[in-house]
Structure formats: structure tokens, C-alpha cells
Amino acid sequence: MLSKKIENALNEQMKYEYYSSYLYLAMSAFCDSQNMPGFASWMRRQSGEEMAHALKLYDFILNRDGNIKLKSIPEPPQKYTSLEKIFKQVYEHEIHVTGLINKLYELALKENDHATSVELQWFIQEQVEEERSSKDIWEKLKLAGTNSSALLILDRDLSERQV
Image (cartoon, rainbow, N blue to C red):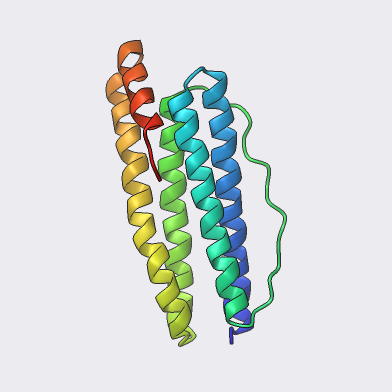
């Protein structure tokens, strides 16, 4: 059974995962509007992955006899200016999420909630991959600059993302 403190923190993290999904979906729409289907596809898949993270928390809360509290999700930004700035924002967002998960993990340790600690280890490992992939794309975009050929190659490469 979850303590109220852990339950509230998990519900808050679930909200943030839903927000991340919404954010990446908004970014996908921008990429589509810029005729960059590979970037749009990558963002849409990322949105789905974030939704899966939220549902993983949802299921965990239920499995521990906790109460689900679906909270309001803030509206994501609607205007973006460049792919490079988007991926810089994605990278910074993932760093922020890592910090939130680390705080949640510390709370679980403090509360001696070993089951939650173990569950959160998956999220900690996932964040390593999330930060790396977003930073890699951002770095490639910085190298590409405004070179349309390089951007089209990167767009094609991103369209091949399987997961």
C-alpha cells in the first residue's frame, strides 16, 4: 500500500508524463507544418512513449491499492521557431524530468517504500536514454545549421525510428 505522500507524488509525476506527451505532440504538429515528416514522426512516437510512461505509473498506483488522481494538464506552447530550438527544449525538458524522477526516488527511499524505489529504477534508466537521444539530435541539428540537404537527411533518418 502506498503512503499518501508517495501516492500524491506519483500522481503528480503521472500528470507530468501526460504533459510531456502533450508537449511532444504539439512539437510534432509544428514539424508537420514545416514539411518535416521524419521529425514529426519522431515527436509523435516520443509522445506515445511518454503516454506509456504515464500509464505505467497509473498501473503501478492501482497495483499498490492507491488512488488515481488525474490532474489538469497545462497547455503546451503552440509556437516554435526552429527544429534546433525545439530539440534544445526537448533536451532541457528531459533533464527536468530526470530531476523530478530523482526527487521521487529519494522520497521513496526516505519513506522506506522499496517497491516504489524498484519501480522508479526503470524510469531512472529510461531517462538516461531520453536525455541521450534528444541531445544527440540537438547536436546534429546544430551541426546541420540551415543546410537543407543535411536537414533532409536527418529528417529521413528520424522517420526510421522504430520505437
